[in-house]
Amino acid sequence: MRRKGIDYKWIALSNTTLGMLMATINSSILLIALPDIFRGIDIDPLAPGNTSYLLWLILGFMVVMAVLLVSLGRLGDIYGRVRMFNLGFAVFTVFSILLSITWLHGEAAAIWLIAMRVGQGIGGALLFANSSAILTDAFPPHQRGLALGVNSIAAIAGSFLGLVLGGVLAPVAWRLVFLVSVPIGVLATAWAYRSLRELGQRRPARVDWWGNATFALGLVGVMIGITYGIQPYGGHTMGWTSPLVLGTLAGGVALLVAFCIVEARVEEPMFHLELFRIRAFSAGNVAALLAAMGRGGLQFILVIWLQGIWLPEHGYDFAQTPLWAGIYMLPLIAGFLVAGPASGWLSDHFGARPFATGGMVLAALSFLLLIELPVSFSYPWFALILLLNGIGMGLFASPNSAGVMNSLPPTQRGAGAGMLATFMNSASVLSIGVFFTLMIAGLASGLPDALQSGLVAHGVPAADAARVSHLPPVATLFASFLGYNPIATLLGPDMLGRLPAAQAATLTGRSFFPRLISDPFHSALVYAFAFAIAACLVAAVASLLRGGRYVHDEATVPAGAPIGIEPVEDAA
Image (cartoon, rainbow, N blue to C red; front, top):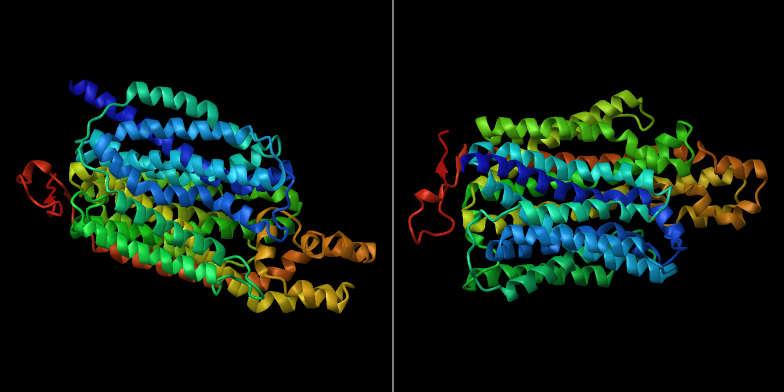
Protein backbone atom coordinates (compact mmCIF):
# COMPACT_ATOMS: atom_id res chain seq x y z
CA MET A 1 0.00 0.00 0.00
CA ARG A 2 2.83 2.36 0.90
CA ARG A 3 4.56 1.50 -2.37
CA LYS A 4 1.43 2.39 -4.29
CA GLY A 5 1.24 5.72 -2.47
CA ILE A 6 4.81 6.55 -3.39
CA ASP A 7 4.17 5.68 -7.01
CA TYR A 8 0.92 7.61 -7.19
CA LYS A 9 2.26 10.93 -5.99
CA TRP A 10 4.73 11.06 -8.90
CA ILE A 11 1.93 10.16 -11.30
CA ALA A 12 -0.10 13.04 -9.86
CA LEU A 13 2.88 15.39 -10.17
CA SER A 14 3.61 14.50 -13.79
CA ASN A 15 -0.07 14.70 -14.74
CA THR A 16 -0.75 18.05 -13.10
CA THR A 17 2.53 19.51 -14.35
CA LEU A 18 1.59 18.57 -17.91
CA GLY A 19 -1.76 20.29 -17.43
CA MET A 20 -0.20 23.46 -16.07
CA LEU A 21 2.41 23.52 -18.83
CA MET A 22 -0.18 23.04 -21.58
CA ALA A 23 -2.43 25.78 -20.19
CA THR A 24 0.31 28.37 -19.73
CA ILE A 25 1.98 27.68 -23.07
CA ASN A 26 -1.36 28.43 -24.68
CA SER A 27 -1.77 31.60 -22.65
CA SER A 28 1.28 33.12 -24.38
CA ILE A 29 1.64 31.20 -27.65
CA LEU A 30 -0.47 33.80 -29.46
CA LEU A 31 1.77 36.74 -28.55
CA ILE A 32 4.38 35.89 -31.16
CA ALA A 33 1.98 34.19 -33.59
CA LEU A 34 -0.56 37.01 -33.87
CA PRO A 35 0.80 38.55 -37.11
CA ASP A 36 0.51 35.20 -38.92
CA ILE A 37 -2.92 34.53 -37.42
CA PHE A 38 -4.29 37.92 -38.50
CA ARG A 39 -2.84 37.48 -41.98
CA GLY A 40 -4.41 34.01 -42.10
CA ILE A 41 -7.90 35.34 -41.33
CA ASP A 42 -7.44 38.48 -43.50
CA ILE A 43 -7.73 41.21 -40.88
CA ASP A 44 -5.51 44.19 -40.03
CA PRO A 45 -5.25 44.32 -36.22
CA LEU A 46 -3.98 47.91 -36.26
CA ALA A 47 -6.84 49.29 -38.35
CA PRO A 48 -9.30 51.58 -36.51
CA GLY A 49 -11.82 49.46 -34.60
CA ASN A 50 -9.75 46.27 -34.78
CA THR A 51 -7.56 46.89 -31.74
CA SER A 52 -10.17 45.31 -29.48
CA TYR A 53 -9.84 42.03 -31.42
CA LEU A 54 -6.10 42.13 -30.79
CA LEU A 55 -6.49 42.76 -27.06
CA TRP A 56 -9.23 40.20 -26.49
CA LEU A 57 -7.31 37.48 -28.30
CA ILE A 58 -4.39 38.19 -25.95
CA LEU A 59 -6.31 38.78 -22.72
CA GLY A 60 -9.55 36.82 -23.14
CA PHE A 61 -7.94 33.52 -22.15
CA MET A 62 -6.41 35.03 -18.99
CA VAL A 63 -9.58 36.93 -18.04
CA VAL A 64 -11.74 33.79 -18.21
CA MET A 65 -9.26 31.81 -16.13
CA ALA A 66 -9.06 34.54 -13.50
CA VAL A 67 -12.85 34.79 -13.25
CA LEU A 68 -13.55 31.06 -12.91
CA LEU A 69 -10.69 29.79 -10.77
CA VAL A 70 -12.29 30.20 -7.35
CA SER A 71 -15.66 28.81 -8.47
CA LEU A 72 -14.10 25.75 -10.10
CA GLY A 73 -11.80 25.17 -7.15
CA ARG A 74 -14.81 25.21 -4.84
CA LEU A 75 -16.64 22.78 -7.13
CA GLY A 76 -13.57 20.54 -6.84
CA ASP A 77 -13.98 20.54 -3.05
CA ILE A 78 -17.63 19.53 -3.45
CA TYR A 79 -17.63 17.10 -6.38
CA GLY A 80 -14.02 15.92 -6.51
CA ARG A 81 -10.81 17.66 -7.56
CA VAL A 82 -9.67 14.91 -9.89
CA ARG A 83 -13.05 14.89 -11.63
CA MET A 84 -12.81 18.63 -12.29
CA PHE A 85 -9.16 18.37 -13.37
CA ASN A 86 -9.90 15.55 -15.82
CA LEU A 87 -12.77 17.55 -17.28
CA GLY A 88 -10.32 20.42 -17.79
CA PHE A 89 -8.11 18.35 -20.09
CA ALA A 90 -11.12 17.29 -22.16
CA VAL A 91 -12.58 20.82 -22.45
CA PHE A 92 -9.20 22.31 -23.32
CA THR A 93 -8.66 19.73 -26.08
CA VAL A 94 -12.11 20.20 -27.64
CA PHE A 95 -11.69 23.96 -27.93
CA SER A 96 -8.16 23.58 -29.27
CA ILE A 97 -9.65 21.52 -32.11
CA LEU A 98 -12.35 24.15 -32.73
CA LEU A 99 -9.70 26.89 -32.86
CA SER A 100 -7.63 25.00 -35.42
CA ILE A 101 -10.53 24.35 -37.83
CA THR A 102 -11.61 28.00 -38.20
CA TRP A 103 -13.12 28.44 -41.69
CA LEU A 104 -14.24 32.08 -41.38
CA HIS A 105 -12.44 35.24 -42.50
CA GLY A 106 -12.27 38.86 -41.39
CA GLU A 107 -14.15 40.10 -38.32
CA ALA A 108 -16.26 36.92 -38.12
CA ALA A 109 -13.08 34.84 -37.85
CA ALA A 110 -11.69 37.12 -35.14
CA ILE A 111 -14.90 36.81 -33.10
CA TRP A 112 -14.86 33.02 -33.55
CA LEU A 113 -11.26 32.79 -32.33
CA ILE A 114 -12.01 34.98 -29.31
CA ALA A 115 -15.05 32.84 -28.40
CA MET A 116 -13.09 29.61 -28.75
CA ARG A 117 -10.25 31.07 -26.67
CA VAL A 118 -12.83 31.74 -23.97
CA GLY A 119 -13.79 28.06 -24.08
CA GLN A 120 -10.14 27.08 -23.98
CA GLY A 121 -9.78 29.36 -20.94
CA ILE A 122 -12.54 27.42 -19.16
CA GLY A 123 -10.51 24.24 -19.66
CA GLY A 124 -7.38 26.00 -18.44
CA ALA A 125 -9.23 27.23 -15.35
CA LEU A 126 -10.35 23.67 -14.50
CA LEU A 127 -6.71 22.55 -14.69
CA PHE A 128 -5.31 25.49 -12.73
CA ALA A 129 -7.94 25.50 -10.01
CA ASN A 130 -7.44 21.89 -8.96
CA SER A 131 -3.81 20.95 -9.68
CA SER A 132 -2.34 22.41 -6.47
CA ALA A 133 -5.05 20.77 -4.35
CA ILE A 134 -4.44 17.39 -6.02
CA LEU A 135 -0.72 17.64 -5.26
CA THR A 136 -1.35 18.74 -1.68
CA ASP A 137 -3.58 15.67 -1.21
CA ALA A 138 -1.03 13.33 -2.83
CA PHE A 139 2.20 14.51 -1.18
CA PRO A 140 3.12 14.51 2.52
CA PRO A 141 3.86 17.92 4.06
CA HIS A 142 7.65 17.47 3.96
CA GLN A 143 7.60 17.01 0.15
CA ARG A 144 4.93 19.48 -0.92
CA GLY A 145 7.39 22.28 -1.54
CA LEU A 146 9.22 20.24 -4.16
CA ALA A 147 5.99 19.06 -5.81
CA LEU A 148 4.34 22.48 -5.89
CA GLY A 149 7.66 23.97 -6.97
CA VAL A 150 7.81 21.78 -10.06
CA ASN A 151 4.17 22.61 -10.77
CA SER A 152 4.59 26.36 -10.27
CA ILE A 153 7.74 26.58 -12.36
CA ALA A 154 6.07 24.62 -15.16
CA ALA A 155 3.30 27.24 -15.10
CA ILE A 156 5.69 30.20 -15.21
CA ALA A 157 8.11 28.64 -17.69
CA GLY A 158 5.23 27.64 -19.97
CA SER A 159 4.29 31.28 -20.47
CA PHE A 160 7.75 31.95 -21.91
CA LEU A 161 8.08 28.67 -23.82
CA GLY A 162 4.84 29.61 -25.57
CA LEU A 163 6.60 32.61 -27.11
CA VAL A 164 9.23 30.42 -28.77
CA LEU A 165 6.75 27.75 -29.81
CA GLY A 166 4.42 30.33 -31.37
CA GLY A 167 7.33 31.89 -33.25
CA VAL A 168 8.38 28.52 -34.67
CA LEU A 169 4.94 27.18 -35.65
CA ALA A 170 3.07 30.26 -36.89
CA PRO A 171 5.29 30.95 -39.95
CA VAL A 172 4.77 27.33 -41.07
CA ALA A 173 0.97 27.42 -40.66
CA TRP A 174 -0.95 29.57 -38.20
CA ARG A 175 -3.42 26.76 -37.40
CA LEU A 176 -0.54 24.75 -35.91
CA VAL A 177 -0.46 27.22 -33.03
CA PHE A 178 -3.79 25.75 -31.86
CA LEU A 179 -3.42 22.26 -33.31
CA VAL A 180 -0.22 21.52 -31.38
CA SER A 181 -2.21 21.10 -28.15
CA VAL A 182 -4.61 18.53 -29.60
CA PRO A 183 -2.51 15.31 -29.58
CA ILE A 184 -1.08 16.23 -26.16
CA GLY A 185 -4.56 16.98 -24.86
CA VAL A 186 -6.03 13.71 -26.18
CA LEU A 187 -3.28 11.62 -24.59
CA ALA A 188 -3.33 13.63 -21.36
CA THR A 189 -7.13 13.31 -21.08
CA ALA A 190 -6.97 9.52 -21.43
CA TRP A 191 -4.03 9.29 -19.03
CA ALA A 192 -5.68 11.50 -16.40
CA TYR A 193 -8.94 9.53 -16.44
CA ARG A 194 -6.99 6.28 -16.17
CA SER A 195 -4.37 7.17 -13.55
CA LEU A 196 -5.62 9.91 -11.20
CA ARG A 197 -7.77 9.08 -8.20
CA GLU A 198 -9.51 11.05 -5.49
CA LEU A 199 -7.56 11.31 -2.25
CA GLY A 200 -8.93 14.58 -0.90
CA GLN A 201 -11.78 15.05 1.53
CA ARG A 202 -14.95 15.94 -0.35
CA ARG A 203 -17.38 18.18 1.46
CA PRO A 204 -20.94 17.96 0.11
CA ALA A 205 -22.48 21.43 -0.05
CA ARG A 206 -24.89 23.53 -2.03
CA VAL A 207 -23.49 25.73 -4.76
CA ASP A 208 -23.29 29.38 -3.71
CA TRP A 209 -24.93 30.88 -6.79
CA TRP A 210 -25.06 34.46 -5.47
CA GLY A 211 -21.41 34.33 -4.51
CA ASN A 212 -20.43 32.88 -7.88
CA ALA A 213 -22.47 35.47 -9.78
CA THR A 214 -21.22 38.54 -7.89
CA PHE A 215 -17.60 37.39 -8.00
CA ALA A 216 -17.62 36.48 -11.69
CA LEU A 217 -19.47 39.60 -12.84
CA GLY A 218 -17.38 41.85 -10.59
CA LEU A 219 -14.08 40.47 -11.84
CA VAL A 220 -15.27 40.59 -15.46
CA GLY A 221 -16.17 44.26 -14.98
CA VAL A 222 -12.72 45.09 -13.62
CA MET A 223 -10.97 43.16 -16.38
CA ILE A 224 -13.04 44.82 -19.14
CA GLY A 225 -12.24 48.21 -17.66
CA ILE A 226 -8.51 47.45 -17.66
CA THR A 227 -8.62 46.09 -21.22
CA TYR A 228 -10.31 49.17 -22.66
CA GLY A 229 -8.41 51.56 -20.40
CA ILE A 230 -5.19 51.05 -22.37
CA GLN A 231 -6.91 51.78 -25.69
CA PRO A 232 -7.22 55.35 -27.08
CA TYR A 233 -10.43 57.21 -26.32
CA GLY A 234 -11.50 60.33 -28.18
CA GLY A 235 -8.53 62.67 -28.30
CA HIS A 236 -6.82 60.95 -25.36
CA THR A 237 -3.88 58.56 -25.60
CA MET A 238 -5.67 56.13 -23.26
CA GLY A 239 -9.20 55.36 -22.23
CA TRP A 240 -9.11 55.82 -18.46
CA THR A 241 -11.53 58.76 -18.73
CA SER A 242 -14.00 56.83 -20.91
CA PRO A 243 -17.48 56.39 -19.37
CA LEU A 244 -17.32 52.70 -20.36
CA VAL A 245 -14.04 52.18 -18.51
CA LEU A 246 -15.08 54.16 -15.43
CA GLY A 247 -18.47 52.47 -15.36
CA THR A 248 -17.17 48.91 -15.68
CA LEU A 249 -14.43 49.51 -13.10
CA ALA A 250 -16.84 51.07 -10.60
CA GLY A 251 -19.47 48.40 -11.22
CA GLY A 252 -16.88 45.62 -10.94
CA VAL A 253 -15.56 46.92 -7.62
CA ALA A 254 -19.11 47.33 -6.27
CA LEU A 255 -19.96 43.73 -7.18
CA LEU A 256 -16.76 42.45 -5.54
CA VAL A 257 -17.73 44.31 -2.36
CA ALA A 258 -21.17 42.69 -2.63
CA PHE A 259 -19.41 39.32 -3.04
CA CYS A 260 -17.61 39.79 0.29
CA ILE A 261 -20.91 40.69 2.00
CA VAL A 262 -22.64 37.64 0.50
CA GLU A 263 -19.81 35.30 1.52
CA ALA A 264 -19.92 36.54 5.12
CA ARG A 265 -23.64 35.75 5.40
CA VAL A 266 -24.43 32.75 3.19
CA GLU A 267 -24.67 29.34 4.85
CA GLU A 268 -22.46 27.50 2.33
CA PRO A 269 -20.08 30.15 0.92
CA MET A 270 -18.11 29.72 -2.26
CA PHE A 271 -15.04 30.83 -0.35
CA HIS A 272 -14.59 30.97 3.42
CA LEU A 273 -13.30 34.44 4.23
CA GLU A 274 -12.20 33.09 7.61
CA LEU A 275 -9.26 31.52 5.83
CA PHE A 276 -7.67 34.97 5.79
CA ARG A 277 -7.33 34.60 9.57
CA ILE A 278 -4.56 32.12 8.78
CA ARG A 279 -1.50 34.34 8.57
CA ALA A 280 0.41 32.10 6.15
CA PHE A 281 -2.56 32.02 3.80
CA SER A 282 -3.26 35.76 3.78
CA ALA A 283 0.43 36.79 3.61
CA GLY A 284 1.15 34.24 0.88
CA ASN A 285 -1.75 35.44 -1.25
CA VAL A 286 -0.74 39.09 -0.88
CA ALA A 287 2.83 38.18 -1.84
CA ALA A 288 1.62 36.14 -4.84
CA LEU A 289 -0.58 39.02 -6.00
CA LEU A 290 2.27 41.54 -5.85
CA ALA A 291 4.82 39.18 -7.41
CA ALA A 292 2.47 38.56 -10.33
CA MET A 293 1.94 42.32 -10.63
CA GLY A 294 5.68 42.80 -10.95
CA ARG A 295 6.15 39.89 -13.34
CA GLY A 296 2.98 40.00 -15.46
CA GLY A 297 3.82 42.95 -17.70
CA LEU A 298 7.54 42.12 -17.96
CA GLN A 299 6.96 39.75 -20.86
CA PHE A 300 5.30 42.46 -22.94
CA ILE A 301 7.94 45.08 -22.15
CA LEU A 302 10.80 42.76 -23.08
CA VAL A 303 9.10 41.74 -26.33
CA ILE A 304 8.62 45.40 -27.32
CA TRP A 305 12.19 46.25 -26.28
CA LEU A 306 13.65 43.44 -28.34
CA GLN A 307 11.33 43.64 -31.36
CA GLY A 308 11.08 47.39 -31.65
CA ILE A 309 14.64 48.43 -30.86
CA TRP A 310 17.39 45.93 -30.12
CA LEU A 311 16.84 43.25 -32.77
CA PRO A 312 16.39 45.69 -35.72
CA GLU A 313 19.50 47.57 -34.61
CA HIS A 314 21.39 44.27 -34.71
CA GLY A 315 20.42 43.36 -38.26
CA TYR A 316 17.10 41.54 -37.90
CA ASP A 317 14.21 42.42 -40.19
CA PHE A 318 11.06 43.48 -38.34
CA ALA A 319 9.21 40.42 -39.65
CA GLN A 320 11.83 38.12 -38.07
CA THR A 321 11.84 39.76 -34.65
CA PRO A 322 8.92 37.88 -32.99
CA LEU A 323 10.68 34.50 -33.11
CA TRP A 324 14.06 35.88 -32.08
CA ALA A 325 12.56 37.85 -29.22
CA GLY A 326 11.35 34.58 -27.73
CA ILE A 327 14.74 32.95 -28.24
CA TYR A 328 16.66 35.82 -26.65
CA MET A 329 14.48 35.61 -23.55
CA LEU A 330 15.40 31.98 -22.85
CA PRO A 331 17.76 32.91 -19.95
CA LEU A 332 14.68 33.99 -18.04
CA ILE A 333 13.18 30.50 -18.43
CA ALA A 334 16.51 28.93 -17.44
CA GLY A 335 16.46 30.87 -14.18
CA PHE A 336 12.95 29.62 -13.39
CA LEU A 337 13.85 26.02 -14.20
CA VAL A 338 16.96 26.05 -12.02
CA ALA A 339 15.63 27.90 -8.99
CA GLY A 340 12.05 26.60 -8.80
CA PRO A 341 12.49 22.92 -7.95
CA ALA A 342 15.60 23.65 -5.84
CA SER A 343 13.82 26.25 -3.71
CA GLY A 344 10.82 23.95 -3.35
CA TRP A 345 13.02 21.16 -1.99
CA LEU A 346 14.88 23.54 0.32
CA SER A 347 11.67 25.09 1.63
CA ASP A 348 10.49 21.62 2.66
CA HIS A 349 13.49 21.51 5.01
CA PHE A 350 13.95 25.14 6.06
CA GLY A 351 10.55 26.77 5.56
CA ALA A 352 9.17 29.09 2.89
CA ARG A 353 10.01 32.47 4.40
CA PRO A 354 13.75 32.86 3.59
CA PHE A 355 13.42 31.72 -0.01
CA ALA A 356 10.21 33.59 -0.86
CA THR A 357 11.55 36.79 0.73
CA GLY A 358 15.00 36.45 -0.82
CA GLY A 359 13.51 35.68 -4.23
CA MET A 360 11.51 38.90 -4.25
CA VAL A 361 14.55 40.94 -3.21
CA LEU A 362 16.55 39.40 -6.09
CA ALA A 363 13.70 40.13 -8.52
CA ALA A 364 13.60 43.78 -7.39
CA LEU A 365 17.38 44.00 -7.90
CA SER A 366 17.03 42.61 -11.44
CA PHE A 367 14.45 45.29 -12.32
CA LEU A 368 16.82 47.96 -10.99
CA LEU A 369 19.61 46.55 -13.19
CA LEU A 370 17.27 46.61 -16.21
CA ILE A 371 16.69 50.33 -15.59
CA GLU A 372 20.46 50.91 -15.51
CA LEU A 373 21.02 48.86 -18.68
CA PRO A 374 21.43 50.95 -21.87
CA VAL A 375 18.60 50.54 -24.38
CA SER A 376 21.18 49.32 -26.92
CA PHE A 377 22.67 46.84 -24.48
CA SER A 378 25.39 44.23 -24.75
CA TYR A 379 23.47 40.94 -24.84
CA PRO A 380 25.55 38.99 -22.25
CA TRP A 381 24.63 41.57 -19.60
CA PHE A 382 20.98 41.46 -20.64
CA ALA A 383 21.01 37.65 -20.46
CA LEU A 384 22.57 37.67 -16.98
CA ILE A 385 19.95 40.11 -15.69
CA LEU A 386 17.15 37.98 -17.14
CA LEU A 387 18.72 34.91 -15.53
CA LEU A 388 18.79 36.75 -12.18
CA ASN A 389 15.14 37.72 -12.58
CA GLY A 390 14.20 34.13 -13.38
CA ILE A 391 16.13 32.86 -10.35
CA GLY A 392 14.45 35.41 -8.10
CA MET A 393 10.96 34.59 -9.32
CA GLY A 394 11.76 30.86 -9.18
CA LEU A 395 13.00 31.12 -5.59
CA PHE A 396 9.71 32.78 -4.65
CA ALA A 397 7.10 30.76 -6.55
CA SER A 398 7.31 27.25 -5.15
CA PRO A 399 7.94 28.06 -1.44
CA ASN A 400 5.11 30.58 -1.50
CA SER A 401 2.67 28.10 -3.07
CA ALA A 402 3.70 25.38 -0.61
CA GLY A 403 3.34 27.75 2.34
CA VAL A 404 -0.17 28.73 1.27
CA MET A 405 -1.35 25.19 0.55
CA ASN A 406 0.17 23.72 3.72
CA SER A 407 -1.79 26.23 5.81
CA LEU A 408 -5.19 25.12 4.50
CA PRO A 409 -7.58 22.60 6.06
CA PRO A 410 -8.10 19.60 3.73
CA THR A 411 -11.73 20.43 2.94
CA GLN A 412 -10.76 23.92 1.73
CA ARG A 413 -7.75 23.10 -0.45
CA GLY A 414 -9.62 23.38 -3.74
CA ALA A 415 -11.12 26.77 -2.88
CA GLY A 416 -7.80 27.95 -1.43
CA ALA A 417 -5.86 26.84 -4.50
CA GLY A 418 -8.43 28.56 -6.69
CA MET A 419 -8.08 31.80 -4.74
CA LEU A 420 -4.27 31.68 -4.96
CA ALA A 421 -4.45 31.08 -8.71
CA THR A 422 -7.08 33.82 -9.05
CA PHE A 423 -4.82 36.33 -7.34
CA MET A 424 -1.95 35.45 -9.67
CA ASN A 425 -3.98 35.41 -12.89
CA SER A 426 -5.96 38.56 -12.04
CA ALA A 427 -2.72 40.32 -11.14
CA SER A 428 -1.19 39.31 -14.47
CA VAL A 429 -4.04 40.99 -16.38
CA LEU A 430 -3.95 44.01 -14.06
CA SER A 431 -0.16 44.17 -14.46
CA ILE A 432 -0.45 44.33 -18.24
CA GLY A 433 -2.82 47.30 -17.86
CA VAL A 434 -0.47 49.03 -15.40
CA PHE A 435 2.69 48.38 -17.44
CA PHE A 436 1.08 49.50 -20.70
CA THR A 437 -0.32 52.60 -19.00
CA LEU A 438 3.08 53.56 -17.58
CA MET A 439 4.81 52.80 -20.88
CA ILE A 440 2.32 54.90 -22.87
CA ALA A 441 2.57 57.74 -20.35
CA GLY A 442 6.37 57.66 -20.62
CA LEU A 443 6.33 57.57 -24.42
CA ALA A 444 3.73 60.33 -24.67
CA SER A 445 6.08 62.75 -22.92
CA GLY A 446 8.92 62.41 -25.44
CA LEU A 447 7.95 60.41 -28.52
CA PRO A 448 5.75 62.95 -30.38
CA ASP A 449 8.47 65.63 -30.59
CA ALA A 450 11.18 63.12 -31.50
CA LEU A 451 8.96 61.49 -34.14
CA GLN A 452 7.85 64.79 -35.69
CA SER A 453 11.38 66.22 -35.98
CA GLY A 454 12.72 62.92 -37.34
CA LEU A 455 10.04 62.64 -40.02
CA VAL A 456 10.40 66.27 -41.14
CA ALA A 457 14.19 65.84 -41.37
CA HIS A 458 13.62 63.01 -43.88
CA GLY A 459 11.21 64.78 -46.18
CA VAL A 460 7.79 64.13 -44.67
CA PRO A 461 5.63 67.30 -44.97
CA ALA A 462 5.28 69.13 -41.66
CA ALA A 463 1.48 68.74 -41.54
CA ASP A 464 1.68 64.97 -42.14
CA ALA A 465 4.54 64.62 -39.64
CA ALA A 466 2.53 66.49 -36.99
CA ARG A 467 -0.54 64.30 -37.59
CA VAL A 468 1.43 61.04 -37.39
CA SER A 469 3.44 62.12 -34.35
CA HIS A 470 0.26 62.84 -32.39
CA LEU A 471 -1.28 59.42 -33.01
CA PRO A 472 -1.71 57.50 -29.74
CA PRO A 473 1.61 55.84 -28.70
CA VAL A 474 -0.29 52.56 -28.27
CA ALA A 475 -0.29 52.22 -32.08
CA THR A 476 3.51 52.34 -32.07
CA LEU A 477 3.70 49.84 -29.20
CA PHE A 478 1.32 47.39 -30.87
CA ALA A 479 3.15 47.65 -34.20
CA SER A 480 6.45 46.85 -32.48
CA PHE A 481 4.80 44.10 -30.45
CA LEU A 482 3.40 42.42 -33.56
CA GLY A 483 6.70 42.56 -35.46
CA TYR A 484 5.40 45.08 -37.99
CA ASN A 485 7.57 47.89 -39.32
CA PRO A 486 6.40 50.75 -37.04
CA ILE A 487 7.18 53.67 -39.36
CA ALA A 488 5.74 51.89 -42.42
CA THR A 489 2.61 51.17 -40.37
CA LEU A 490 2.27 54.77 -39.15
CA LEU A 491 2.91 56.46 -42.51
CA GLY A 492 1.09 53.99 -44.73
CA PRO A 493 1.90 53.12 -48.37
CA ASP A 494 0.35 56.32 -49.84
CA MET A 495 2.50 58.70 -47.84
CA LEU A 496 5.64 56.60 -48.33
CA GLY A 497 4.94 56.49 -52.07
CA ARG A 498 5.11 60.29 -52.26
CA LEU A 499 8.60 60.42 -50.73
CA PRO A 500 11.89 60.00 -52.62
CA ALA A 501 12.87 56.32 -52.65
CA ALA A 502 16.05 56.96 -50.63
CA GLN A 503 14.16 58.82 -47.88
CA ALA A 504 11.43 56.16 -47.74
CA ALA A 505 14.08 53.44 -47.45
CA THR A 506 15.78 55.30 -44.60
CA LEU A 507 12.54 55.85 -42.69
CA THR A 508 11.50 52.18 -42.95
CA GLY A 509 15.01 50.78 -42.45
CA ARG A 510 16.22 48.93 -39.40
CA SER A 511 17.96 51.91 -37.77
CA PHE A 512 15.66 54.94 -37.98
CA PHE A 513 12.86 53.87 -35.61
CA PRO A 514 15.07 52.20 -32.96
CA ARG A 515 17.28 55.30 -32.68
CA LEU A 516 14.25 57.58 -32.66
CA ILE A 517 12.43 55.78 -29.87
CA SER A 518 15.41 54.85 -27.63
CA ASP A 519 15.33 57.89 -25.32
CA PRO A 520 11.51 58.07 -24.91
CA PHE A 521 11.42 54.29 -24.46
CA HIS A 522 14.00 54.41 -21.66
CA SER A 523 11.93 57.04 -19.85
CA ALA A 524 8.93 54.74 -20.13
CA LEU A 525 11.02 51.79 -18.90
CA VAL A 526 11.93 53.71 -15.75
CA TYR A 527 8.24 54.23 -14.93
CA ALA A 528 7.31 50.59 -15.56
CA PHE A 529 10.24 48.96 -13.79
CA ALA A 530 10.02 51.35 -10.82
CA PHE A 531 6.50 50.01 -10.32
CA ALA A 532 7.82 46.44 -10.58
CA ILE A 533 10.52 47.17 -7.98
CA ALA A 534 7.94 48.55 -5.56
CA ALA A 535 5.64 45.53 -6.08
CA CYS A 536 8.48 43.04 -5.49
CA LEU A 537 9.72 44.79 -2.34
CA VAL A 538 6.23 44.88 -0.81
CA ALA A 539 5.87 41.18 -1.74
CA ALA A 540 9.15 40.54 0.09
CA VAL A 541 7.77 42.23 3.21
CA ALA A 542 4.57 40.17 2.99
CA SER A 543 6.66 36.99 2.67
CA LEU A 544 8.71 38.00 5.69
CA LEU A 545 5.53 38.41 7.76
CA ARG A 546 4.11 34.99 6.90
CA GLY A 547 5.44 33.40 10.12
CA GLY A 548 7.54 30.30 10.71
CA ARG A 549 7.29 26.78 9.34
CA TYR A 550 3.86 25.29 9.89
CA VAL A 551 1.42 22.84 8.36
CA HIS A 552 -2.31 22.58 8.97
CA ASP A 553 -2.70 19.23 10.73
CA GLU A 554 -6.32 18.15 10.50
CA ALA A 555 -5.73 15.53 13.18
CA THR A 556 -5.27 18.29 15.76
CA VAL A 557 -8.41 20.22 14.86
CA PRO A 558 -11.31 19.46 17.20
CA ALA A 559 -14.71 18.73 15.77
CA GLY A 560 -16.69 21.88 15.10
CA ALA A 561 -13.64 24.15 15.21
CA PRO A 562 -13.83 27.17 12.96
CA ILE A 563 -12.31 27.01 9.50
CA GLY A 564 -9.79 29.71 10.30
CA ILE A 565 -8.12 27.84 13.18
CA GLU A 566 -4.40 28.64 13.26
CA PRO A 567 -2.29 25.78 11.85
CA VAL A 568 0.00 23.92 14.20
CA GLU A 569 3.74 24.38 14.19
CA ASP A 570 5.58 21.88 12.01
CA ALA A 571 8.49 20.60 14.02
CA ALA A 572 9.70 18.26 11.29
